[in-house]
Length: 431
Image (tube, rainbow, N blue to C red):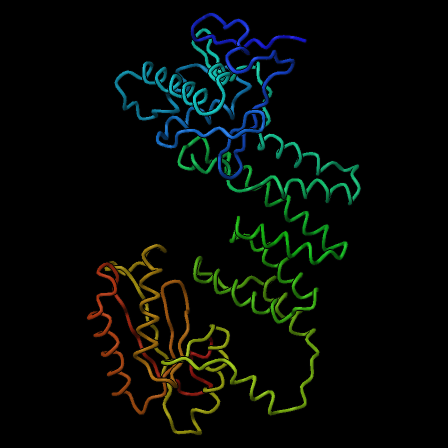
């Protein structure tokens, strides 16, 4: 049996038999410090949580840096530059020593007395003391990702490793320090590693026909990165395979709308191809026309003008092109564009609220028979049936007046243009 010694090098001496500070017995093994960096930060000593003060960002910043680069002896000037990159502090050396003292006090008071020796100092350099057994989830995560890519593994062994990765990754790397410059590249590094691992896991599960498991993995993976299209595609394929194609199509509509709202982009070719594959495989046949009519009217009709997706809008436009000449009516296309006062496309964060308010304006200012949809991240387009050009101009005036009266945005101007649909040879047929 050996007694645990912990160097407390800041004072250039060590505590003899430091174990007496925290227990009556003598340790034969070093304390285990378990640290979670993927998701919410957590530090455990021999399985017990350590509650750290959340009041000082710099305290977290310094402790996190020492943990992540624990295999190095870090010069004090490097820590000073990391903590105060703008050199906006009078006495950085004393400020650093004060932070170290606060970390040691915090760890020993709220965790374990022996943690006072967790940060070691020697000859102007700081490091984590080697007298503890550290288990850090980001390091285990990286090791598992590397092992899972070994070419000599069986498919079953790969899946087992990827499931361990799946369980280990709880969220972004050190989210408490998301604004720190040194954290940003590590956040990207671990997140990309996670996406690669999950795409590979989904690929292997699909090969083995384990579609229910694909659904489970996607439900956990998607909230961690909603912009990763491969996750959404895998989820749609899995829903279709487990006998719920209607849910798959509903989810397709949801996710394509989300991408449009958030990024202003339309579905990729892969997504469109997936949609067609699912719809082509639907082989349900209904012989009762009454049931079809009931299904067509099952959803409650909304008040105001009719909103639809752009693909539906295109179909309706093409249909109206065929009928407008025979009916004698005049159909107009209105384009509403939000721009700043320089005529430029505003930033996305400026647009989101204003676009939603313009949608509300269209819904309640147009008639029930009118149709509108989102055309781009800053534009709406509408189809209106009107008797003549004078009335169409009156509609433009009314929409512009209501936009101004509602004061939707003082920074953005609404530009409205209107043009009549002349028939199938009209130069607007490329909508």
